[in-house]
Image (tube, rainbow, N blue to C red):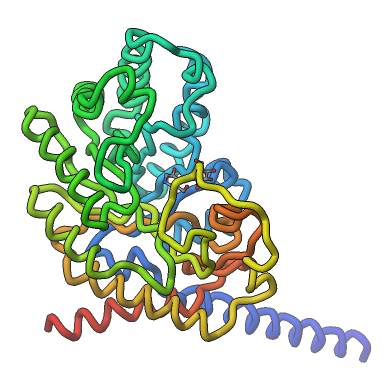
Length: 379
Ligand code: 9MR
């Protein structure tokens, strides 16, 4: 008798187990994927942190494989990481990233060769123009050369412009003069003939800064040097993404015959102390509890504003899908975003499509829905 009961008990448990398993599988397969949804339109990417590249953040890695077909290393290929000492390189993380991407059929946008920020410490002591020139040549030849064709593309030069469209003061401008940008692209073209070459910046949807970017691109083209595309970073606020300027910029950049990309998209729900859109990493402000209004959760009303803003943006991206080759989010989920610590540290921000538990947010479903409304319109 006892034996019979335990037999029934085991069968019941097994059946329950199957049911739970089935539920989990169905739930997993029911979540749509960004890369599938937009596969005929543009690549969909995410930034990858060092922990993700090393496979330590398993939940994020699972989501990356499921959702994205392009990745950008958030920090691991910046100059201070990859060339920490003069002419001494550390390729560990970049190699891991390239291997991960190859295995999972994901394209790598390498970030970045020439940027005034996150330079190796030794560059702060380099005084003469010859040494700066030597650094630039070494760095581009070695790094772009090693990953030629293994990475899909490079942000060759990052953030070379001021808000008024003039060239930003940097060690490169100061020591090498304004041609340093064309020279960087020329070096990248020679070292990496099989990867695409891009210029990347924030706020270049604004008229003055956009004009500066157009001047850079035209100058590269006039020199007979290859530039394949331009990345508009897309660090905006959920309640004021500058749609008109974005549309103008897509048209203006596409008219130059190059790809347009949105390379670091996130929509902050928090104000910054200056009440503007900026991604200037040197602009920091003091911690202030009054500036952290959603420390515990995101109110529905704010989530709706964000969803609407993502909807408007993706409708625009789809309208210009012939010109747009990639849309990359600057991080996998809200908890990992740089915006929790910039420009005010220790805030709770919610700028991305997945929440802190890796669950899709309303904004995720809004973005997915733009694809079907786009298909309905075009058929
Ligand atoms: O997200 C990056 C953050 O982890 C770094 O601390 C920061 C340091 O410069 O850089 C962030 O990424 C920036 C990107 O490389 C270039 N555009 C602006 C991004 C946000 O600051």
